Image (tube, rainbow over all chains, first blue to last red; front, side, top):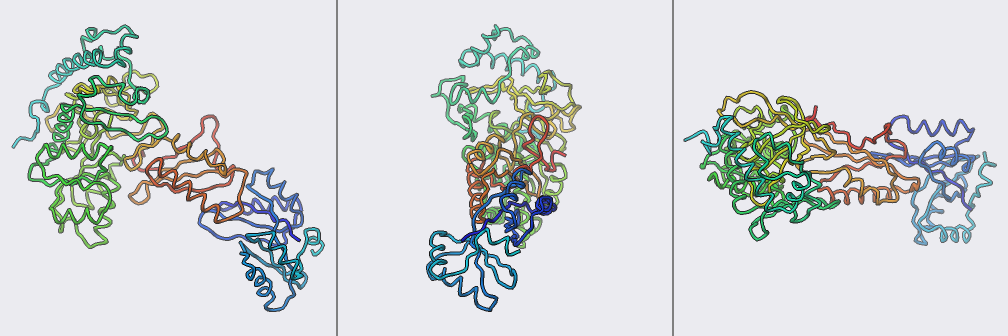
Length: 142
Length: 436
């Protein structure tokens, strides 16, 4: 029901982002989606990629501040309003979204997000038959 | 009216100064030996008796006294008089180790006030002046030290204390303040707020003299502050171990601070070999108090680096002149008049399990204000949560502020990003103007 996300602590300094990307490139790891917010001092670079475990190890060995965690990935039909419907289901249950980003893959929309209550989010997904993408299916979509 | 507050003492010739120093040194050593268990043991340990002090040169036989000695004997172990003879206590902050305590008898306080009055008179203060003190009061000696000295001189003295800039400005205009004591960065701040409020210091105030100290500053900073406020700014040197303000002060020549040699014997030593360096060369300032009852200190290592300015001063005083402080021989940081040791910062940082062990303290002058940035590396337990990181930053800042009394800018940085040096770690980078 969840996919693995890599989170990297990036200092707001030129050259830090490219260092991380080059490490992934050297291992032939492909980015599927990524996001980074701008703050004054640092950012958290979040990545969904083709081989999260390998990416984690490579970065860790290179001394990068990195963590691996599970996030939800939900596939939606490419029709206006589907995101509102899906997120609405969580809001109705009082579950907050900590952060969210999205991308299009093979004509389908994918929402990646983290909630403040993973167990209840799972229940909402199951009850409403939302199409959650498991990790093993993610690279198949590429 | 005389140029001098204590005409006889201020204009002593070198040989007269040295004769007085020898007489007072003998009395001080005898007093320490009979009154202080600490000094009796210390002198006994090297087989030195008070009567062995026969010349000023014999001072070198006495071991140095350090800040650690003050901590080890906390709170009253250094006193040379019974506690009931003491009437005032000042103490340094020091939540990491023991603080240091300095005791004063009534006579000590009178002598202290006299020294401060002498300094203020030297820069032209007279009883018709209005003196406003923007120092913190309380344990910080810049408050009460200047208060009693300015009162002794006979000025109307306003204990405005630190902060509340708008109120300070109101006092300037309402009370006709002519002399202000402030740390240099606060003097610049006062000017900034005057500009915001449309106050022209030359037109709207009677400010004439500024006494600056406690915070190291460059000659450029002094000149800029003088231009801003339309005043003459005089540098001062003091430290609570030596009583507080009034130890050394610039005269109207603004070329070095006369240290009152009827109160102190000055030595400048190489901080490594502890051997004296010739006049004009930089070394560590070592002071012996020869005019104190409660707690005289023999050969106290101040850890301040400075030099004696050779030659005579046109002002007619033969008391030696100290150059502005050039830095420290230990790792103590002086920021905005507050003394900070890196170990205090380290102790706080190491309590956070989210942090790794490397950190870097950077001191810089931003506009006219000295500021501290603490960069600290995150540990492996990296948290993927912006609000948690911000909370962490805030909590570190708060705890540091409680410890060092100054609010630093805290920056979380990834592990491995603080440059590692070979051998001894570099913990402090001082980019401030005054040491350059």
